[in-house]
Amino acid sequence: MASYASDETISRIVETYSSMLLRLACTRLDDPADAEDVVQEVFLKLLTARPSFRDSEHEKAWLIRTTLHRASDLRRSAARRNVPLEEAAQAAASQAGSELLTAVRALPEPYSAVIHLYYYEGYSIKEIAKLLGVPAPTVGTRLARGRERLRRLLKEDDA
Amino acid sequence: MNREEYKAAFDQISFSPDFQARTQALLRDCLRESEKETQKMNFSKPKKLAVLLAAAVALLAVSVSAALFLTPADVAARLEDDPLAAAFQSDDAVALNETAASGDYTFTLLGMVSGEDLSALPAEYNGETVRDRTYAVFTVARTDGTPLTEQPNLSYSPLVAGYHVSAVNGWTLGATCQSFVEDGVAYYLFDTQNLEMFADHTVYFAIYEGSVPDPALFPTAEDGTISLAEGVTGALFTLPLDAEKADPAAAEAFVQSTGLEFISDGEAVGPENDAALREN
Image 1 (tube, rainbow over the protein chains, first blue to last red):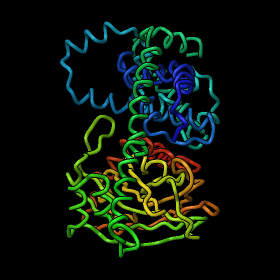
Image 2 (cartoon, rainbow over the protein chains, first blue to last red):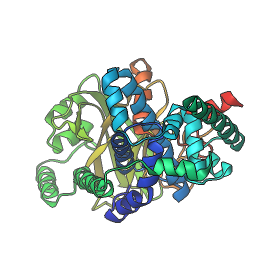
Image 3 (cartoon, one colour):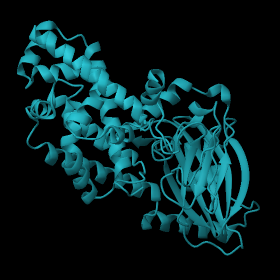
């Protein structure tokens, strides 16, 4: 029960994983503040639920999956809130973004997660399969389809 | 698109410069709160124990108990929870008196009761009061009859067949426990979020040497049944819950709320894999 109950562990997990998880949450969320909320929530969950992990890879996989899950939940609930168009436009304008970011966020979650872990974090297909708990061929398929969709989305933006 | 382009786009996003400091402070506050809760669980505050021991000595001086153990109602009353003592005497309470021996110890699950607002001390979990709870009373004694002088170093947890032991257990369910030693026997009053929502599954109560439940301590068979690993000192009782009181939606919502629904012994289970199966 004490595996996450120390100041040293808190420093370690926050320093090791914050940047990675914040960027990962931004594959689903437009607002960096929302991503910060999600990542704090995930760390709190780790502290209170105190799951036991086989090793640091297992710990990282849990954090990645939980972050994706929470970020998708928040995105769904934001969509349900029916944000007025003017407000949405203002929010979009205030966000540091690019066509590429917008296109990644427009991908279905299974694709954007794989694309991000491959292109930003530099993981191999095999490593991503382990982190997400899906077969390697599925990761390969998602990577190929995700790339193709991204290419189309970015072309549409250019047109 | 290449890696550099992709990285540059994501590196443009600016987060709060103090995010890590704020997060560490938040987690440390949470840790301190959780430590306070743990102290409550251990119930080993010297003052409280002294009062309980004095009460036990005074009682022994004037009477000799005919029963082998205190009843669950007695245990709740000793712990100054009269409403719960009354609940253990109500028709809703279940007397179990089941015993198992393992290692040096004999474990006896005396009884249980579930319901809303049964206790004088409603439990808090993550800052929320959880009034709807299951209470269980059990004892631990040395099998060779040597009296215990202090509580053995044991853990206790409900587990539910069909759910991963890391997702549904005393830690995720916000369980607390109070205990005292009397006549060489350790008495425990355990309480947790109401377990009746899981009543359409086999619900276990584990008393064991070890920490947070994991598959090494509690292997799960293919049909979802859970057992205690060989060589682990402990007992795994089955709780007789009324299947009609099951609430599968609440149970599912609870498991989702733990954020641990993806965990499995080997390959992950859950929506991610379901999606993979659909794709392949």
